[in-house]
Structures are given as C-alpha cells and as structure tokens.
Image (tube, rainbow, N blue to C red; front, side):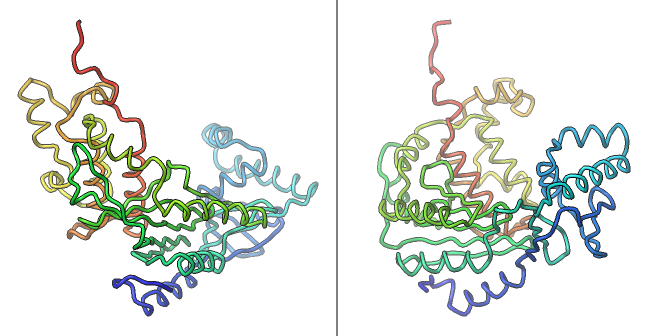
Length: 369
C-alpha cells in the first residue's frame, strides 16, 4: 500500500478495522417475514428493527406502490390503515411470488436498504480489495479516508505523477497546480468512483461527478465488475485528468458568479457548520458585492431566486468553488455537522458548481433597450 505522510500503515489498518466493525449486516430473507409495527419499525422473526426512509421507499418500489400514493393514504386514512395495507399487499405478493430480498441492517439495528434478489451489496471486503489493488497497481497515495455509522466508506487518493497546471487569463499559474486521483465511496446505493482533484498550492480537494470518468456500480455481477474495470483503465490512461476539466477551470475563472451561485455557496457552508456570517467572507467574498448592491438601493437578500440568477457579482465561479473546497478541506476550528459525510459532500457540491452551466455565462453585458 502506498500511503501519504499523513496516513501511516498503522492508521490505514486501524481505519480498515473500524470500517469492518461498522459494516452493516447483510441478510437474505423472504419479504413476507417482515411485519410492519409502524412505518418506522418492523418485526422480523421476533426482532424489532427500525426502518430508514430509503428502506420504506425500497419496499414500496418492490410492491409497486408509489411513494406519493403511500403518502396520500397515510394523510387521509392514518398510519394504521397504511400499515395494514402495506402488510396485506406484501404478504399477498410474497406468498404468491416468493419475493426474496436482501436486508442491509446497520449496527444500530436499522434497516437501511432493501434490495431485490439479483442485486448485490458491495461488501466491505470487495470495496477494500478494489481500492487496494487500484492503489498498488497505479502508485496512488491515500490523502484521506473516512467512515460513518451508516456503513459508508470514503477513500481519497492522488497520483503524484499526474501533476498538471493550468494557465490563462484570470488564473494564477503558481496556484493552479493539481494532482489527479480517485475518490472511492461505498454507501448503501453501491460503489462510486469519481475523479478527485487536489489543488497543491492550498491543499484543497474537489470531487467531480459530471465528467464522463465518473463510475457508479450498484450491482456486483461479473459483467458489472468487467465494465467497471474497463472504465477504471480509461481513467488511468488519461493520467487521472478528467476530459474537459482544464477548459472548465478557465471558463470558471473568467465567468462572474451570480448572486444565486454566491448564496448557494454561503448557505452550503452555513447549513453544515456553526460558522457566523462575519466569518464566511474569507471563504466566499460576498461583502463588497452586497454593499455595492445596497448602494444602488437593492437589498440582495430580498431578490427572488430568478433575479439573483441574473445579477452578477464581483467574484468568479472559480473563486466560489475554491472557497467551498478550502472550507471543506481544512479544519478552521468551526464545528462541522456530521463531518465524515459533510466534507466529502461539500467537495462534490463544489465539483457540481464547476461543471454546471453558469448563470451569467450567456448574459449580454450591454443591450440596446
């Protein structure tokens, strides 16, 4: 295993042990063996288990009952009728067709997901086997690794030989130097591998899912593994630099962010931490923009979202992206809500902002009327 200076072999081994301890129980059962107590609790062979919202949706999909229909029934007839209906349909269909499903139960005895027979959970063993093989084969280093109590695992890696810089108008060449890598994530929906970009000058990380190099696998049948490895080889062949990334960075550096995009970044940081408004400005420089609008008699916070999307700020999309990734990549002393998931999700949100169509990129600077 190639590990960065921050992550020792001992750290990695401890991380793996913790991930195995938190892995969910996988149990194949007949769907008829589940008895609803409430919409949030079920009985399975005398054992009371909680039900996540996603698990409830899974059952409704398996039974052909839409989530909207279930909500209407619950609001009109009450929860008891809804439970009776769900149990009646479940038992009837299960006894008729013998529906076999796989439960994924967290250590807290909560059913997180319910898969149909034929689909497979990407086990902790399979996940680490894939990650370690890819790391060793391609000389990757581990920058960060995280687990959570819901069976989620995240491993961020970079390839030190994939370093590249981006030069152009609006960019500081000394700062825009990257290493490419891969972000491996296993959760209840499957396995996701995305390009991971590490900005060397300020040690910011960003996860991008909108480029064609992103890979998602919900099943682990042989053909799925085969296609997955083909996609990995394509990423490796391109030296971990996503196709189109350089052009997107240059465009982002030369496109003013809209007030809506600025507010999105502000709210992303505020909603996931205990940061105060005055402390946000170093990450999202909104002060000058807000004051300039106020001098014109316009209160930015009173504008509609549509109006904000058509209002240019004095900072670029690239500045906004880096503000989010800076906050997500470092510990500045603010309390982060659910840090294991939040930091990675913020990096994903930053990548989504970079790769979307920007609000102001097609606005005309001057118009005749």
